Image 1 (spheres, protein in one colour):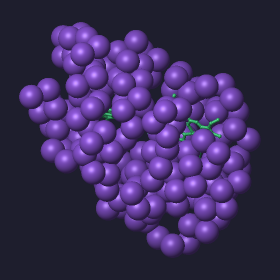
Image 2 (cartoon, protein in one colour; image 1 turned 45 degrees about the vertical axis):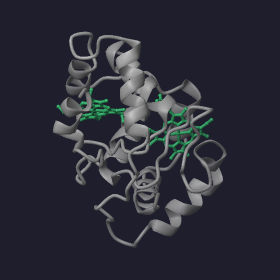
Image 3 (spheres, protein in one colour; image 1 turned 90 degrees about the vertical axis):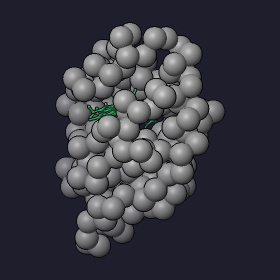
Length: 170
Ligand code: HEC
Ligand code: HEC
């Protein structure tokens, strides 16, 4: 089965690693998974491990990608085991409600039809690193508008947002 390769890092249930070195992918939306896999293989998103495992020697084409995305999107999403502390959760919730709900949804559940990723329950350190990559122009597939939105935030907003999102249940 194709997913066995992925499970070596993302885990058999797709929940990744709590320290954020590997993201949770279980229950991520079909369109988001397809897009990320295509973007890794086209170097629109940089990570040596994912670029290696999404290249044409590992995934032979659109059918493999669609099959994998269908399988992963049906795995039940979980809440990160790294819950951090309570300190800034409320601040994170406020920033989120003001700037992020219109795309990622009120419970950060995302939207398959519009291709907005689920963020709820994702690992804190992973969320933080992706937002930092965006701000530093190290994740080319982020739209310029999204990069600007994150660049306008205050430095402490990013960890607060990550903390809040990791705690949201599926
Ligand atoms: C060697 C370890 C490894 C393997 C094998 C691997 N991944 Fe990943 N995957 C990662 C890491 C690390 C990231 C985060 C990369 C980053 O920081 O940008 C990631 C990111 C992703 C993402 C993006 C998640 C998001 O929230 O945007 C998807 C989707 C994904 N992997 C799917 C897969 C699939 C499908 C396979 C099997 C074909 C696979 N991965 C195999 C380590 C791995
Ligand atoms: C206009 C719609 C829109 C708004 C508003 C928006 N996002 Fe996003 N966000 C997206 C899309 C689309 C992606 C996928 C981008 C990609 O893969 O390149 C994304 C990706 C992300 C990711 C990466 C997820 C992953 O799994 O790798 C994070 C983290 C994120 N957004 C956080 C936020 C936060 C925090 C806010 C509010 C400050 C926000 N977004 C506001 C549309 C939006």
